Amino acid sequence: MNDLDTQAFTALFRDAYKKCFGYYPHRTLSETESKLFYNKIFDQTGLVVGWKSLKNYSSFIVGQIGGKPENPSIATLDSLARFVMDAPYCTETERKEKESHYPYWFGYKEKFHHSLKTERILPKTHILKVILLVTCFFLIIAILIFFRFENRRLLKPFTDDFHDLRLASLNNNGWFAQSTDTVFWNRRGERPDQLTLFTLRGDNWPNTKEKIGIRNLVLRKITKNCFESEVHLSGFIPNQNWQQAGILLLEDTNFTGKSIRLSIAYNNFFGGYNRSGEIIIQAITSLGKDYGEPEEIAHQPIQYSDSIQLHPALGQSLATSFLRIEKEGQKFRFLYAGGSVSNPAFKEVVSHEFDMHPQYIGLFAMKGFVDSTNNIPAHFTFFQLKEKNCDQ
Image 1: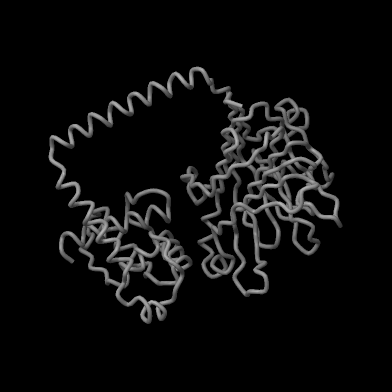
Image 2 (image 1 turned 90 degrees about the vertical axis):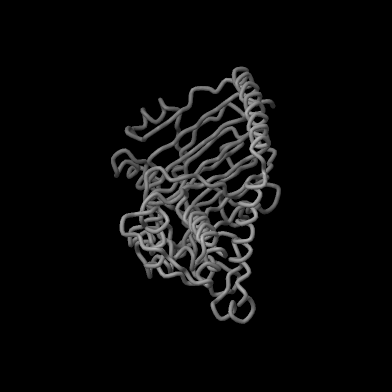
C-alpha cells in the first residue's frame, strides 16, 4: 500500500473500531475483543474479516512495539467500509457476482483523499480567519447558553443506587410499587445494592382479552415537563418472547392515558420467516386505552441468540446495559449504551416527536401475556432523574 492508501486504511479501521466499541482504538485488541469485532462485522455485513487480522491491524494502528506493517486485501478493506457505511447485508458469493469492483472501499478512499486535498488547498490565512470566526461564534453561543441556563435552572437530580430496598426507605425516596406479587416482590433485594424485578406475566399493551397491568411496577412522580432519565441494568439477557425490562413513562397509573416505554427485549417473531432470535432495544408509544394499537418507533437489534450460543463471549456485550430518555418539550430522545466496561458510550436509538406530559416514571420487567415464557430476573443497579424548567 502507498502512503495515501495506508492513511485511508488507518482512518477506516479507526471508524470501524469506534462503531463497534464506541471509542477510537488506544491499544491492541485482546483475543476476546477481536472475536467480538469479527462477529459484529459478520452479523451486519455477512462478510468475514478474520479476528487475528483485526488484532494485527489494531496493533499496527496504535503503533504498538512489534506491530508489523499491514497490507490488507481490497476485499477486506471493502468489508470494513461496508461495516462503517451500513451497507446492505450480502454474502461473499453475492459480492463477487454483483460488486466485485469493491465500490465501498473505493468510495471511502475517494472521500478520504478528497478531504486531504481540501485541507491542503485552504491557505493559512484563510484557516486563521475561519478559526477566528468559529471561535467568536462558539463564544457567543456559550454566552447565550450560559444566560439561558441561568434562567432555566437545572434542578437537583434524584439518584438511587438501591442500597436500601425496605418499603419505608423506598417511600421516603419517592418510590411506590403497584400490583405487587408477594413472592417475587419479596425477592427485590436478593442481590445487594440492586433492585431485582422479574419478567412476570403482564403488559401495558392494550388487549381486549387481558387485563392491562405490570406486576411489581416501581413508580415515582415527575414534576417537570423537561427531564433526563437513566437506568442501569446488570447482566440482563432475555432469551424468550417477550421478556423485557426498562423505563416506562405514564400519564396516569391505570394505563388509560398516553405512555412510552423503552426496554431491552427479546424477539423471535418474524411473521413466518425463519430467523435467529434477537435481543433488541425497543421503544413504543401509546395514545391510550381507547386509541387502538401502540406504535413501535424503535426496534434495534443489539445481539442475536444464535451468535451468543456459538460465541458465549458475546454475552459480555450485555454485562452492563444503560437506557436513557431525554425530553425537551414534545421531543424525546432514546439512547442506549452497553458492553463489558462500566462506562460505555451512549448512542441515540431514535428521536421522536410525541405530545405527552408524563406524570410518572417507572421501572419494570415483564413478559407480556405469555404463559410459556420463564420469569427471569432484571437487576437494576442505578436510577437517575434530572428535571428542569423549560418552555411549556
